[in-house]
Length: 141
Image (tube, rainbow, N blue to C red; front, side):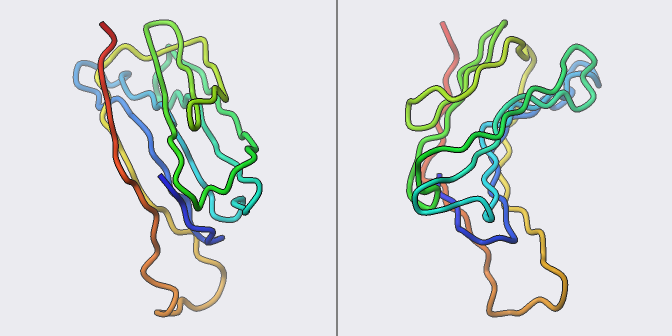
């Protein structure tokens, strides 16, 4: 995944429970949130972690992590979770660990958000863009 250094955008990739068996099954694993205003050529910030949403069994555990990389270049953002932990990594390097987990079915979400600055929108500023080369998932044996 690679973002665009546009201060009005956020590229996000997350997994969220879709409340198949219970309305409580709605927690979120935030694999990566890349805000365009904190992306630089030598350092970028990524938000990762767990959001409880309305799941009473969970509590928010998010981290804002500054990394020595240019998030406009291709990087691999990953999450590995089991019944008792969630591990986050970028390019194979561990960056955050959560000691709670989600055991219900999840759906993958990917979105490019816009946070327009005050004033008029200009057609020349569109289209907004973020890029995803591939997504891979697997189940632990």
